[in-house]
Each structure stands twice: as structure tokens, then as C-alpha cells.
Length: 610
Ligand SMILES: Nc1ncnc2c1ncn2[C@@H]1O[C@H](COP(=O)(O)OP(=O)(O)O[C@H]2O[C@H](CO)[C@@H](O)[C@H](O)[C@H]2O)[C@@H](O)[C@H]1O
Ligand SMILES: OC[C@H]1O[C@H](O[C@H]2[C@H](O)[C@@H](O)[C@@H](O[C@H]3[C@H](O)[C@@H](O)[C@@H](O)O[C@@H]3CO)O[C@@H]2CO)[C@H](O)[C@@H](O)[C@@H]1O
Image 1 (cartoon, rainbow, N blue to C red):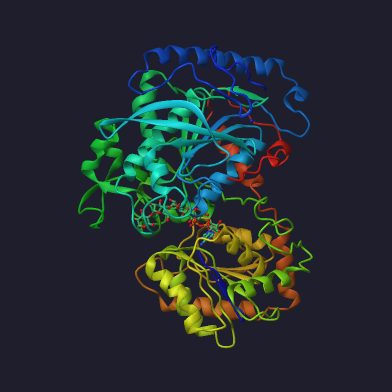
Image 2: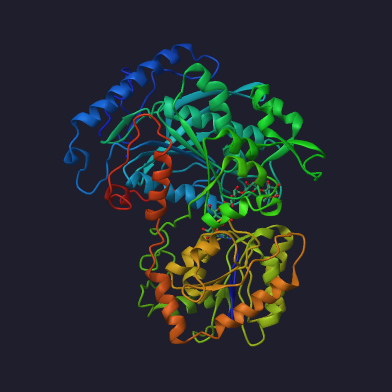
């Protein structure tokens, strides 16, 4: 991540009792966990369970019918807590904030599920247990999973926060590797380097996620209890979860399990597809007839030359719907090979829906932000104090009259920090620049060198630092987002809520969320070729930054600040679009939840603090 600063630049879901029919459970109390009558639930020994499932399914159908006939509005809604009949939703992802996060994927898995719960749906997330989360308890439910020719046991940890069942898959390949480093070592030992067994790890995640709704007797609140059962919509996120629709189709549905379940595959970033040697298909525990969905040829030697398997391709093809995180990015993905990263032809066939991301308005709220010594609101009267605190924090001259430009992003080619570094020399002159960032080694070095090149004017911090990220969002006047491509982008949303005006490249969600001259500045689209810095892009940054700085202190900028802060950037709107799309899948018994607050009061009391 990084934030730039300038003329001062800071670069751097009624009541579903007895849903299960599993009479032998033991209430474990506080956490709402019930012990499973079965000690394990391996994919190899499903016969008894199949019968049990049939029982669950028929009870579920009966329950749905009862709900519809007997429930009145007041039964369904107690106080302000939204508890419509709703859908059973299971979001699956490699990251879920705040427990695990290397970037925006974690934010979305953190923020969208509570918003869906607040819309009246029963919502679970399933992600790995990378750390000993102090708020997540062992359910005592082990599951045996076959992967790579061996049988592995995973356990489920659970907590209930903000209306969502947060389920964490426990296996040594997650915990032992990543413990204490959930901000950086989720995918590999260092940025750009992957764990060799990532296919094994994420296969485990996908299979565990298919087991969780069936084996976990959850009693998290008085409106829902028992297992989620079979009538589920899974939302799989990015390549790590692409095997889920494949296992559903190949292993579960043929056994009569999850017959009506559906999968939505959400693309957060098509740059990461999970391409592996074709020979690795044999370790995935999938039948040969699915191989075609994975089959992929590209011109690269990485990880091997020639024919490959492509997880994301299979995820797209085997899911019921494909979604991405902004309408403009959806258009870009089908526009050609470069922006569709060689999956454009596949997505053109399946179709894709773009729903812009929301942001977590609890974590990111200038009036309550725990990382800011001084809180502020849309009067922005106290914002200069936050700026001064930021300047002092990063060691730049403290002067509220100098415009400060921030930059925050994973230091990957995507984010354009390398273009920014070149552009700084073109406008730094009398301006100051501060940068913080984390990512690929050479980009870290570039960022860290800024204060050597531009002493007193630019600072780079190559670290994943949540507190500093909040200070930069709050303390900067402008936020620079020079991305080569940006599926949605959350930085500009965070910035706008804090009255920090975004200066953005005209790509993906940045086009959908930042309006030129009204809520920010557009720089035009950049060259998506990641191996070089295009001089035209350098010029575009320099020119637009100068244009933005020229508005500093003017009524025009003040108006833009007010426009930025007046927007509802929460998950409320996007979650309604998600609801519409998910309902259209017509999974048995699914209904619209009841309109209510964005985050139910009960949920508000349960803000996650891992
Ligand atoms: N060094 C650092 N220290 C602390 N926090 C840091 C940090 N670097 C980044 N962050 C945080 O990580 C998040 C980044 O989110 P983005 O959506 O902007 O980008 P990302 O590319 O990771 O996400 C991808 O998925 C999301 C979600 O769909 C899409 O919005 C996006 O376009 C797509 O690329 C922000 O919350 C930011 O504060
Ligand atoms: O939330 C931040 C992003 O997290 C995910 O991206 C990760 C990606 O899925 C992983 O595969 C890995 O990417 C590395 C890639 O595998 C490797 O070959 C090399 O190109 O370096 C990449 C970066 O290290 O790490 C990514 C996170 O850095 C998620 O898929 C994205 O949508 C999120 O933006």
C-alpha cells in the first residue's frame, strides 16, 4: 500500500427452529454452537448422511411452507432487527476482513455479508483459519476431505458477528504457514511468490465450504437455527474458490445433495487466475469430464510452457452466474484479450453482471475512526488537524497550508506506483510527496527511496499498516489512484467519505464511482502493459495533479469535498443489487428479506475485533 502527499504530497437472516432434525445435539451455549451427532462427515462415507439430508431437506421444504402461511410482519421483525424469510447465503473466500486481509477481497468478504444479513438473509462466510482468532470458537466438528490422493481432516471454528456466521476452516496448511502474518503471507512466503501447495490448500477450502452448511448446527440468533441445509446460494470469490462449483457438480449433485443449490462466481481481479500445469488436474479430485472447463493455453512459460489448467476459467464456466465488482469493469472484461486477460471469450459466452462495491461505513467513518486522534464530520473543520498529525507521523514538515496527496495500494503493477514514482519528479518542485506501500520488492525500494530523492517532500512506507492507511485517508487533501486497471477500487470510496478528493485513472470501478469535476479528477485510461511505464501516463498524472492542486483552497474544491462526503457509499445499495441477482437464481424457498437498517442493531454490538 502506499500514500502520496503533494504540493504537499502524502505518497503512501422466521425463526427456523428445529431445521435440522438432528435430535441428538448438545447445546454448547454462548456461541450458539451445537455439537454434531456425527463425529466426522467424510466425502467418502456419505450414505447415512444422504438419508439424513433427505430428512433435512423435506423438513426445510415444510418449514418454508409454514413460514409463508403463518408468519405475520410483526412475527418476522422484532424491533429493528431485520429477519425476513430470506435466502441461505454462503460466501467463500481466501480472505475475510478483518480476520484476514491483504487487500480489497478481504474488505468485500468483510462488508457485503453483514449487509446481506441486514437485508434479512441467513449469511455465512467460509474462509481459512490463518490465525488463532480470539473470537472464533472450535465447533468440535471435523470433516474428512479427499484431495491430492490423500484424506485430510479439517475442523471448523465459528463466531457470529454483525449478523453473519463467520466460519473458519482449520488445517495446518493455513494456520502453521500464516500465523501472525495474515496481512502478508496468505498466498505465499512473500509478494509475488506462491506456496507450492496452493492448489491443495484452496481445494481444501472449497470442499470444506461445501460441507459447512450441512454439518454445522448453528444457533447464532433467535431467528435462525440448525444447519443451513441444501437450499443454499454459494458466492465463490476469485480463483481460490473456483473449484467449488466443480465439486458441487461432480460430487454432491449426483448424490442428490444440494440439488437446487446455485453458485455465483465473483471476479475481484482477473489478473489472478490460478494457472497451473495440466498434469495437476489429477490432484484436484475431479472427474475427467470436467477437464475441458479447465483447459487453457497461453503464450507464457509460467508456471510451465504450453497447455495448462486455469481455475478461474473453470469457476466461470461451472457457476450459474458470473459477477464482477463494477459495471465498467464488466464491460472491460469482455472488451478484448488484454483487459479480459485471455478469458474475455469465455466471459462473453457466460455473460457477466457488474455490481459496484460498497464500503464498510463502520470501519471507515471520520466521525468515529479509532485511528484518528481528531474526529471530524462534513464540516471538515477539524480535518487540517488530522493532516498535521499525518505529516508529523511520517516525518514531513507540519504545515496545514501545503496540499497533501496520498497513495495507498498493494505495490503491484496494477496499482501504478511505478508510474507515480516517475511522475513525482514532474510536479514535485515546490510540492511535497509522502508515500507508504507494501508489495513487490523492487516497488518497495522505489517507494522507500522517495524520501532520499525528495527530502522533506516525499515519504514512502513499505508496510501493511492499517493505522497509517486510516491516517492517510483522513489526513490527505487528495488521494491518487493511478491504476493500470482497477476492478472496483475501495481506496477512492474510503477517501471520498473522509472528504479527501480522488484523482483517478479512468478504468474499471474508478469510472463508475468518481465523477470528473464533481467528486474528483479523472486522468484518462492508462496503458495496461505492465512491463513498462508509458510516458503518456506519467504526463497524465503530472498534468492532473497540477490541475487538482490549482483548486486547493478554492470554493470549487470545497464543493467537491461536500459532494464526496454527501454520498451514500455504504453496502446498502450494492447489497440490494446483489439480493436481486441472487433471488433471480430461484433457489427453492428463497425469498426477499425485509427492508431494514443497513446493519441491524444486534449486529452493531458485534463488531469484529479479532
Ligand atoms: N499497505 C497497506 N496497509 C494497510 N492497508 C492497505 C495497504 N494496502 C492496501 N490496503 C488496504 O487494502 C484495501 C485495498 O482495496 P482495493 O479494492 O482498493 O484494492 P485490491 O486490489 O486489493 O482489491 C481487489 O478487489 C477489490 C474488491 O472487489 C476491488 O475493489 C479492487 O479493484 C481489486 O483490485 C483497502 O482497504 C486498503 O486500505
Ligand atoms: O485482496 C487483495 C487481492 O488478493 C487476491 O490476490 C492474490 C492472488 O489471488 C494470489 O494468487 C497472489 O497473487 C500472486 C500470484 O499468484 C503470483 O503468481 C504473482 O503474480 O504475484 C501475485 C501477487 O503476489 O496474491 C494476490 C494478493 O497479493 C485476490 O485474488 C485479489 O482480487 C485481491 O485484489
